[in-house]
Amino acid sequence: MNRKILKSKFPIKLFWIIILLIAWEITAISGIFPPAIFPSLSLIIKALAESIFSGEIVEQTLFSLLLISEGLIIGLGGAIIISSLSVINKIFNSLVETLTAIAHPLPGIALLPLIIIWFGTGTRSIVVIIIHSVIWPMIINIMTGFRSIPKIYREAGLNMGLSQYRIIKDIMVPASLPYFLSGIRIGWARSWRALISAEMIFGAVGAKGGLGWYIFKQRVFMDTPGMFAGLAVIIFIGIIVEDFVFAVVENNTVKKWGMI
Amino acid sequence: MGDDLDKMTVILEMKGVSKYFTRDGKIFEVLKNVNLEVLKGEILCLLGPSGCGKSTLLRQLAGFDERDGGSLFMYGKNITKPEVNRIMIFQEFNQLFPWKTVLENIMYPLKVNNIGQSKGERKDIASNYLTMVGLNEFANSYPYQLSGGMKQKAAIARALALKSEVLLMDEPFGSLDALTRGSLQNMLLKIWEETKVSIVFVTHDIQEAIILSDRMAIFGRNHGEIRGIIDNPLERPRNNGKQAFSEIYQKAYSLLELSAER
Image 1 (cartoon, each protein chain N blue to C red):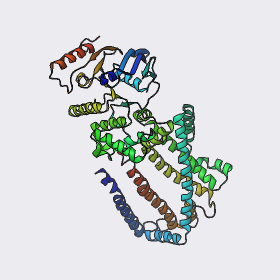
Image 2: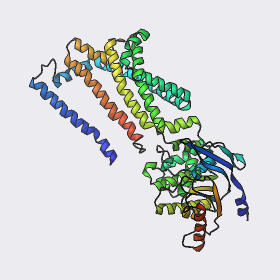
Image 3: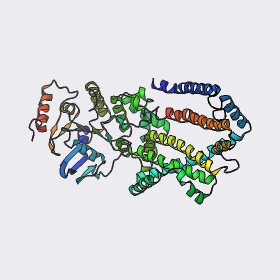
Image 4: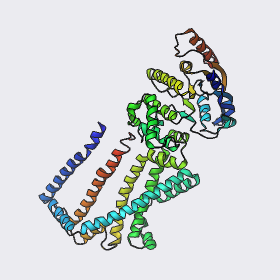
């Protein structure tokens, strides 16, 4: 019963998206706002199609996704290693807690000037900002997950002769998977914010730059439909990843196991 | 005759076991110089009201906690940490891992302990024990799909599959309804007879202790010490209609000192 409701979430989302699009189109056609501010759907779709066919937006999206993947993977790997070490060692744990308290409230964008001095304005700086934006919330989530594990799992594990390594890998990780997943979700959202803001400030890094630069560039040309085309791509990727990656992973793990 | 001799072997030994807690600056003695032996193949019940220290003593036997004095031995060897030859069955229903099916929950510790040559062999071992506790139909279910009683059966199967010599059971049926509890007691007695496993069974239910035990160690209220050991030679199956049952009940009841609050 529960699963059916969850599965039917996507059509409901689609329904509302269609309603919103219709409302948008009606507003645009009514002419309350000039098209240069509030373009109609057809103009946006045209701009999107053009930049897809020219390959521009595709390349820039791939460029951005690549940077995000790099930052997310390094951030997640780092978060797992750091959290695991904190479980094993109390002194390290207190160090990580202090570092998290210092670094977590710092917005990545506030560090930008410093990072430019340290790493320049290349892709490396963007990845560094993404890592900074994702690693702290992921550490917080994973450690909360570890702390929330019922004592009984650990004791049952010790009783059946598990090594410390197996207790982390085979018990603590799966037992805290709901927290892991929400950590990755937060990391994913944070990485987009970091990426887009960094790209807008850095301008074209690499050959062409990414989506953030694409959107920013359209403003220079007063190409409002083009700006919306860039936003549409971000929204589209967000929905796809949420409903076809995160939801699928959840359905096959924590939901299947009755953990959430 | 051989059976009787076997029963005389001491498998677990507790010598002067003491443990304190400090709460609000006051010291509470949870275990006060406890001396007790568990014989191989017997069911020994630790009977007492809640807070008397019986679960704390069981956790000592498991090797989970530190203590303030005394020693524990298994076959004369010091108990220093949890080991596979003494498996704890907890009262809580969540001792199975929710991310593994019932079958996988039993197979996983077999793999860790190198029991069974192949995955197929481990699966056979696990299935056998699931059948023994009557859960074979639910081998591929996840723990959340089982009732409380079934989860406890699966936990028992997991311990037995590991060829554990002692089951340390901490009020394992305490959260079950009376009917389910009765059927699990019968099941436990059946597999005990089949496997000859030694059992230390913690309970606060006099009737349960009499139905299951060969001997009962009685804890008083808030004393942290054993007030007496009652032999329970009644023939199985036992039921509380019989005269001898009531006599043992009275004996246990008076040792528990439930009426005389100090």
